[in-house]
Image (cartoon, rainbow, N blue to C red; front, side, top):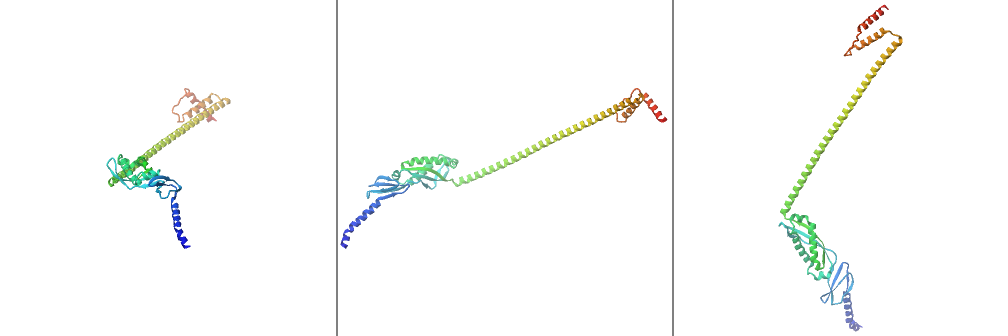
Length: 312
C-alpha cells in the first residue's frame, strides 16, 4: 500500500500543479478597471470587466489600469508674469484614462509627464499675462491649460477633464502692496458712503424744510381765504340788516302816512310829522342836512300846536 502511494505521488503532485496553474490563469476584472494582457512580451489584448482566462506561462497581465477619474495635486511651481513678477502657483489636475493600451505604452511615467507638462504649460500661459490679470483671470487660465494639456496627453490615452489653480502666492513685497491698496480702496469706499449719506441727509432736510414752507404758505392762504369769506359774509349780513332796517322804517313811515290819511288828518298834522322826521334826521348822526324852504311855516305850525297843548 505504501509503495503504491509512493508510486502515485508524482502524479498527484503534477495534478496539484496543473490545478494551481489553471486557477492562476483565471482572472476577474473588477468594475472601473481594465487589464492589459501581454503574450510573450508583446501586447495581446485588453480585458474589460468580467471573468477571463489567459494562456498559462505565455500570457501575463502587464498592468491593472484604473479607469476612474483621478485627481493629482502638484506642488507649487515658480512662474514669471509678463511684468516680471515671480510667484508660486500650484495646480490640481482631474484626468481619466480612456485607452489602457496607450496609457501603458505611450509614456514611461504618465503622472510625472503630466506634472512636467503642467508646469511648462502654466509658465507659457502666465508669461502672457500681467500680475493683475493673473490674479483675476483664473477661469481663463484654467481653460487654456485644460485645452493645451488635453491635446498633449491624448497620445497617452489620458483625457484631462479639469485644471484648477489651487493657490496663487505672490512675493511678500507684492502681497504687502496689495494689502495696502485694498485698505486704501476700502477707506475710499467708506468715505464715499459717508459723503453720500451726508448728501442724502442734507437733501432730505432741505426737502423737509421746503415741504414745511409750502404747507405753511398753503395754510396761510387757506386762512386768508377763510378770513376774507368771513368778512365778506359779515359785510353782506350787515348790508342786509341795514337794508332790512331801512325797509322797515320806510314801511313804518308809509304805514303812518296811510293811517293819517285814512284818519282824515289835515295839512298841519302832515307838516308836524315832517318836522318830527326832520328832528330825527338832525339827531347828531347825520353829517349833511337838507332844510326845506318852508321851514318858517313848519315853525309856525309847531308854535300853534304848542299853544293848543297849553290851553288843553
